[in-house]
Each structure stands twice: as C-alpha cells, then as structure tokens.
Image (tube, rainbow, N blue to C red; front, side):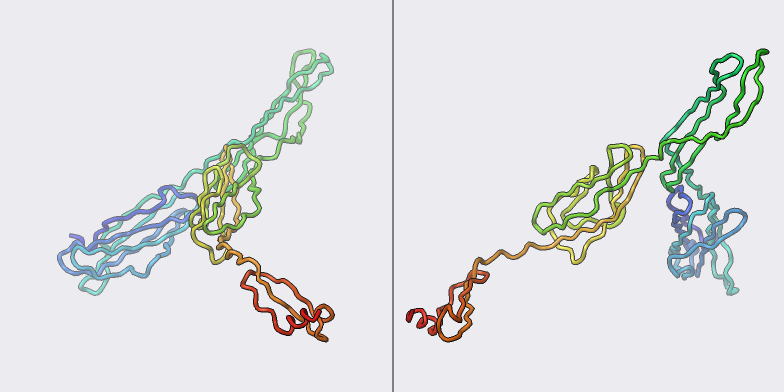
Length: 327
C-alpha cells in the first residue's frame, strides 16, 4: 500500500502557446494509517532534455496525518513544442531515506497558431510572341499574406520568379528566360487606436467618452486588458466609457484598452483617467476696503476697491467716514 499517493496532478491552460506561463498543481495524500513525512517534485521534458519547474512555494516536504494532503504549486514557460510533465511522490522511511512512491506523467500540447487571411493576390503574365503576333498566357503567380493574431507575425506566401516562353511554328514551347518580378501589393491592413487622452471625471457628475480607432474593418470591439476604470464607470463593447463616478482617484489611473476589428486585427493603447471632487460652491462677493492713507483726503491718497466672496460688509472706518463727510 502506498504511503504517499498522488491524489491530483494537473496543469493550466489546457493547450498553452509558446512563451505562455503554465501553472502546475501536484497534490499528495497520506493514504497510510500512520503519520508520514512526504515529499513531491515536478519536472518537464522536451527535446531529449529534462528541466526543473519553478516552485511557487517552499513547501515540498511535510509530515501528514493519515488522510492529510500536501499541495505543491509550480509553473514553467511553455517552449515551442509539446512537453512531458512528470510529478513524483516520496515518503520518508524508517531508514531515514526518502523513497519514490508514485510517478504520474502528463502531455502538455502546444497550441497550434491560427492564421488570419488578410490579403491575397493572383497575377497572370502574358507575353507577345514574334511568330503569331499574339499575346499568350505564359504563367501565373499567387501571393497570400496572413497574420498570426497571437504573435502578430506576418506570413508571405508566393512565387517571385516566373519563366517566359513562346511558341514556334512547330507548336513547341521553348524556354527563353526567367524574369524576377517585383510585385507591389497593398500594405497589410492595420488598426490603430486614435483616442489620445481621456477627459477627467468628477464624482457625482455623468461621464461619457467614446473611444475611437481607424484602419482595419469595422465594426470594432473594445475591451480592457490591464487596469480598471474608476468606480461607477463602465466600458461598452462599442467603445463608450460612461457612468457616474462615485469615488475620487488619488492619482491618475492607468488603463490599457484593446480594439479588435472585424478581421481579428488588434491594437492596444494605455490611457490615464483622473476622477476628482466638485469644487465648493462660490459664496458670492465679499466687500472689503483697501485704503492707502495719505494726507487724510480720500481720492488724493486713498483707494476703495471691491474684492471676492460675499460676506457682510464691514463697518466703514471712522477716519474714512470723517474724510468723506468733510468733502
């Protein structure tokens, strides 16, 4: 009977792409009737070589009561081919040595890149013969341009060289020359986010801003790939940011938006958004007097001015009042 049984061994995602992180979980159970110290390890192999995973925790050894579990979590970066993933469980024997108890292997398939056809071109070449004084078709050339949506890589498939021949009176075709053609085809389509900035929002006030893009094929679909909108705001799939902010932001919030056109072409852009509070209501006008006293005559060396915010008018100084009355 095993002491350290592999209860579960799994990974995600199910079919990772090259360069993608793969998370692995190995769960070992004490299936004996006594406390046992157990250990586990995980490796992955491809191309005839075996590699160690990166463990997300330091617990690979633990003493378990009967029925207890040891959970080991790790990850690795998917190479450009499928790998074999192996998990092992060990138990600590009375001879003070860890013994291999169980081994389980899994195949991690690499996802096959999908290509999107974005442009195709077919060219027919004709040649004027000296014998029949007619144009005849002597060859064709096809060019296909595709794009891999995950890596963004462009693939060009086609033939650049073509053989030119003509027909003699005997009806035979004779090789004349090979012409290397320079084919001008439209640049691969792209989609670009044209929104350059987002207006600031105010808590309690309705907010609305439509994101814009150009290029590619409409309709566009919008999403957020990093960050989040401030509380109270949402993004629709058509690219409209709307709602009423409920909480101010301490600093500008960075958000990465992604637009996808109807052919699957994508573009991303990071924008910032700040939400503040409403300014306090104005209290009106406040009357004050600035006096530059000179010879005691208002106007000759004194100035009365009105300044901001409304408050009860202060009493006129007696000196100014006497000066006015004497006039």
